[in-house]
Image 1 (tube, rainbow, N blue to C red):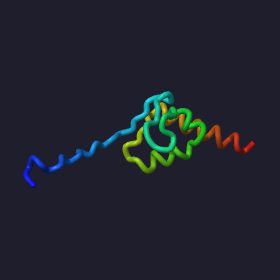
Image 2 (image 1 turned 90 degrees about the vertical axis):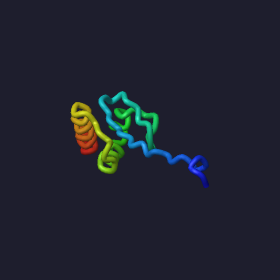
Image 3 (image 1 turned 180 degrees about the horizontal axis):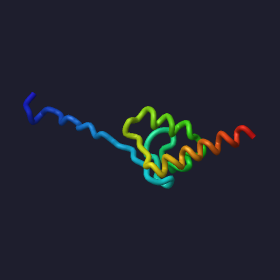
Image 4 (image 1 turned 90 degrees about the horizontal axis):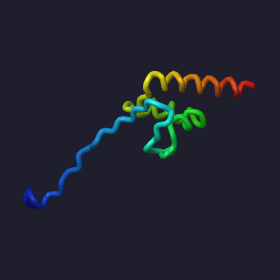
Length: 80
């Protein structure tokens, strides 16, 4: 097979998932198409899983603080 006939290798594109606000839309996985804020409120364990399993899944400090508040509110409501 000549050089011209060899299939072109696909370049691996490393994706980073950096979220600044609750309005940003998740573009992968189980909750694709939903806002990060909606997922934070309805299924915070999914966000925790993403943070732990994807090293490039990041939230800006302000959003990260809000996420911790939402998780605490959810825990407080479950105790009632």
